[in-house]
Structures are given as structure tokens and as C-alpha cells.
Image (cartoon, rainbow over all chains, first blue to last red):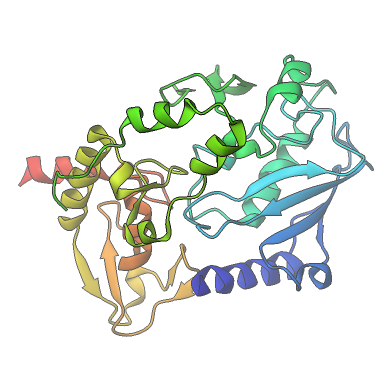
Length: 170
Length: 143
């Protein structure tokens, strides 16, 4: 779709020129295939991930921006975080139910960076072992369960049997 | 759009599953024949895409209602006034004089084609996440 390509080009330019702190995109590497990006992330100073390097993969489907991109950590180094599974899947509501076409690759990067920066303790999600064994390769196929408790967002994944939108917002 | 969409029958699938040869059954369940490509695709909820003839009755009703609601939202043409914003955040292109726009009750403005495509998936404003139907209803009540 031509309009999607135009938007992706604009987004890539913006992210290369003016990336959020700790984010780096090698646009040379992306030029060949606009629908798949690799973004380098670095743990923010004074966070528990300070100095650690991660890689995020973005896949933009043909319905982007009406549908969210597929975003996950890739490579050897997956951050140990309560909302990041050891296979790189991220439990972040804007990547599924709370996606809006007004969001962008840049806002997703910002959310992921701030998710890491605000973390106080390095640990995997409690259901990591089970999830990694049973989930789909595409994190967008998981029915995530997001909780908002006492203004603090707690997230857990559930397996895919829920009929209703499993969102418990207050 | 009428209410004559055919819901897929489960009987057909159970017949296919009856085959002893698993590979044969797999093949029979493979990609739909090409003539189906002309059937329009709807999105009863975000990230869900379904051919018009595969929608459940509930989804058909939801889509018909949504089409009706969208048609009540005001439209206009970009006349260059910057009050209405200059860029469509969905396609990230600036408005061009004469382009068709749609105005949401929250005062956010988009290209008509861009926002209609989104509203069919989710009846919220992409910018402020305000549910559009609640705002629509309140304007009805005050009038």
C-alpha cells in the first residue's frame, strides 16, 4: 500500500534524525525492506539496565498504521523484566488493544524505554516458562491480560481462551 | 450491505476432517479459491480481519451500526484554515486544499478515508482515545 510506505519512510526519517534517548536506528540496514526494522536500544543511565544493549524488531504489516506493528526483542540479549518474556515477547498494551494509528514506531520505542527505565527489579514474568513453551511465534496472537491496579500497571499474559477483551481497566 | 451474509457451515469442515489421509484434509482446508478475493474485508474489532461472508451475525450487525454512526459524523473539505490542524496523524501527510476531511466530536480532524478505515475497527479518536459514540450521543441529547 503506497500510503503505508510513505508513512513508514517519514517515520524512519524522524527516528533516524531525532531518536529518543537510548534509541538508535541504522536506516542503511532498513532501506532494502521498509516493513522490517531493527532498532538498537540502550538501557538508560541510572536505571537497572544501564549500559546494557538490546535489539528490538519491528514488523509492519500491510494494514499498518490501522493495526499495530509486531514488536519484540531479538538477539542474544533479552532484558530480564517482569513484562518481557525470555523469547523476546513484550506485554505492552499499546502493542495490541491500546494501539492507535496516532502512535508510531517512535512512540513504541519511547514506551519500551520507559518500561525498562521504570523497572526496579530484574525478573521474568511469573508465567515465563509456560508462556514460552505454548505461545505463538507472533506476540500479537497472544491474548494479553492487562491490569491497572492502584494506578500502577500490572501485566500478565493469559492463554488464549478468553472470549471477551481481557482488559480490566479502571 | 444487506443481512444476507452466509455464515460458514461447520458441517463442511467436519466432512473434510473425516478423511483418513491427513495431508489430503490439510490440502482441502488450504487457501480459499481466488474468486473469494473480491469479497470485501471487514474488521469487526482491531486486528481482526474477516471476509464479508465469514462474519458472524453479531459482527454483521455491529458493522452495519458502525457504518450508520460514521455517516452521522460531519465531513468537510480542507480550506487551508489552520484551526482544524494541518496534518492527518494517520497517514502523516499534510492536508491539501480541497481534500475531504472528517471531524470528530472531540474536534480532531483527519482525512475522511483515513479515519473511516480506523473507525470501522475501533470507534475511538486515534489522538485522544475518546470514544466517538459517547460524544455523538451527547450531541444528540443536547439538540
